[in-house]
Image (tube, rainbow, N blue to C red):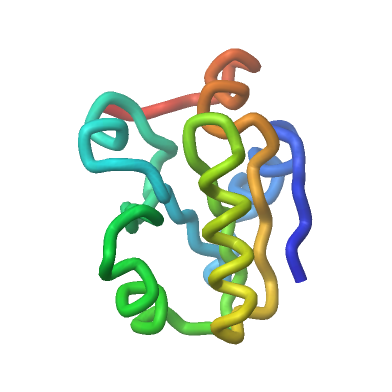
Amino acid sequence: MIKSLSSKEIYDMISKNDDELYILDVRTPAEYKERHIKNAKLINVNDAEFENEINKLDKSKKYIVYCRSGVRSMKACEIMEKSGFKELYNLIGGITNWKNNGFPVEK
């Protein structure tokens, strides 16, 4: 299941400190270094090892997936869903929308 959620909805999910919830940044390492959401794990969707890396993750957990604008994260969600992940949340508008709405980022 893939659900696309707004920055506010994602922020509210993160704020609950759910141990079952993980945040994936699927951008490049350079983009991640520039800014990212706190506690996000970097796995570049355009890397040849993307599928190998996601298959190391626990498929029973919940994952928030984001990129710069929402396109790469949706691609990543589709790959993850085909690999057996059950609960995926795509951040609408990516980190650009997140930051523009005043939500915190780290460098």
